[in-house]
Image: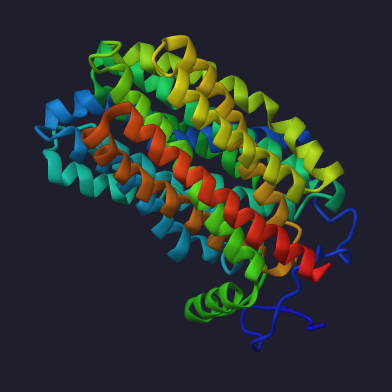
Length: 418
């Protein structure tokens, strides 16, 4: 058995994909439950920045003078920008103090949000959307940091709590964006978000004390190591592909709902569409149960179950999506499947070697948000071409492909090593 990568600058080897059972059962500097809860709340506030716009897409399109298909670029560019930031900036979490990286990310987002709240035309707004995503790293810097300060047996629970914060932030952002945007205008939503980011800075710096980096190497050495990890750990490649397709399926739902419920079939306004997200937030309450299930039964079984739920939800939405009740029920089921998929995949990768955990998270998140961005872009075209049936078909295909990636990649790679 190869001994794996023990530092960024180490020679090329093949890291084991087995859980790192040699880790201490009680790592130094354990985080309190209150600190983890604060991290989850801050993650939710930060991740919301890319999702406020979704129920407001028709209003933003009218204001900026762009088509609805082009408006699909707004969530797409945000997620593609996030994938780029995760790829090129997140690995710095291994070689620079985590608190410094978090501080830069928060301040950069606050400035960009304030600029987006001003009277920009379409092109500058789209460019800033990409840059906003590029610096949206806070929710993805924190999980690797937290798991390094958590006993191995509790990582599923901690991962689920942080994922819960992210999911609640994503869903509440749609509700807040829809309601506030209807009454005060969509630009006010971005101004509000800028203030919220500044308010997170002090508690974030208290939750993450100053500490030296895990390893010392150059940035380019780190990036070379990132490529090495990608090439030598098949499990992370499959997990990233699986989650990219699953996140894409989830993204299709929420962008499709924004157009569908505000279109001729229902004629809702943005506040009612945002209200759907508040109902969908109930799915996030299941996150701790999913984490405990993954700890007890194994994340692979949890992953396959979650993806089966995701596929079923799209079938339900295609059949019963002609009524508001059908949309709401299908949405809740799909949110549950998407939540469980992400938690299960994260639990899989966070059982790998701790010294490369930030790089594993980098590869995973690049796949996740690249998939989400691609599907966000395709959703605009699916809606323009075929309406709600086209949206359901796109989401279902993405979910089925995620299931195939899980079965033929994630599960088999784990079994082959075990």
